[in-house]
Image (tube, rainbow, N blue to C red; front, top):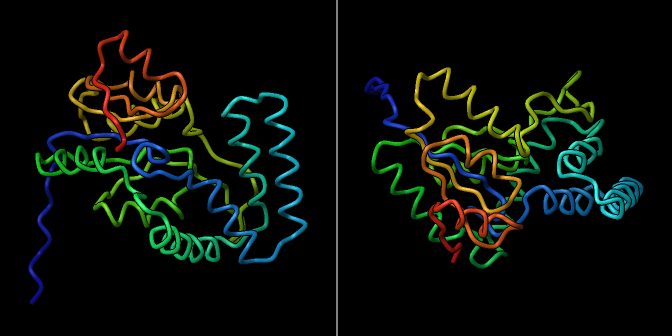
Length: 228
């Protein structure tokens, strides 16, 4: 007979950005390259690359880039994206030396050992984040939710957009549902776009390597760690 699962209450939460914080690749961009490679969608790739290049030339914000990125998912089968998400992760894990940032993963493990649950907070999407979460024993993912109609993505995303201030909004809603104080929680991020996430908790940690965050973290007296 299977023993009943014992429900436990987390002692607290530690929120982790994923791309360039926990892993050394940008899951969004790498998955998109993989998708066009395995599906052979030449026209879709050309439209996507032209759109992204135009946005970069205009110095569009991360929020705009993120929203436009997901418009290229319009018409894709949710089930097919899920299947390719796991296949993509297996390929990346097998072919990317030092995929995981060891010191950051060690922090995640220490939180787990202390009874604190790790939570992913990412502008990426669940189909590619779930395999990473499964590998690290992470149960909660706060990420981009794409609108779905008839089993296919519409190309629109739902609120909150988990970029910039949207990460803090997602964390706040998550903690309110659980009755946990934000000042008792931890957060990890590598980029200035993670600033709102780090400001949303009592114990922020900056991971070196991203844009503009390290100097600000040093000025505020936050903990700073190296990804390797």
